[in-house]
View: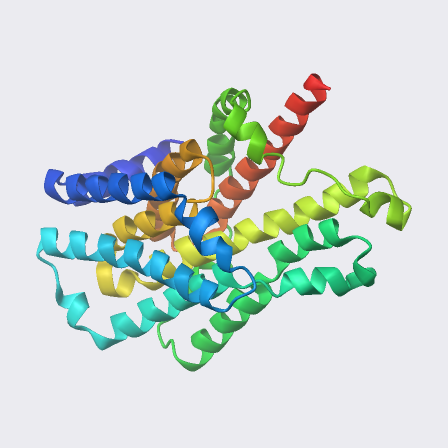
Length: 312
């Protein structure tokens, strides 16, 4: 924990100023308030499910959040050189396009209906919705990294070397009481557990824990992809243009990713995204973030299962 604390303290000392962080906080409050006032993601954007324009709407949402953070940071810091670099726009538009594609893609709904003749639609839908990023994220990243990106980055943070696991495990442990408290909130229990069961266990003739475990593996994979997007490309990959300034716009964009979640989770993502972003920037690795993100996600599902088991 000391290593994590020192990394955060070093970054904040070098980066913090009231003007930049103050304007960023105001911007976050405004976009979060607007989202939860008009139900932007669930009520408006998601009404286009099955329509390719949904991808464009998600692109606009993430682009507005990300470039808003970029403009606030660069103008307040008077470090606007990145904005005059064509490569910055190429890289940023690429990753925002990937985010839009990943958020708006919905073909897995049809695949779920066709798999096993739709007899396990709910289970297939939940699993495929977490695995389809192989097409929407992994494939575009492979093409971009090997044919366009000339800057070594260990494939955006997939650093092969061993790293210290203990501090990240301690971060997960630190979250346990907070998750325990959250699990008593009605909003939390309306959203979690993320998998609420299906007929898949009976269909395959296995115990329900087998299908639940398979789903949770798929669920964890989706969080690995999230870390790769935000702490990998948007932090490690974009650091060549913005230096330590990559953290603020990444955090704003990361908060917008949570607009369909309970308000407390969106607010928490700001602080969690900031911490994981700083650590990824310093270590040039996303594996610590993956441990924390997947660990917290699985703990939230576990807490919800325990609460609902108590209720019933």
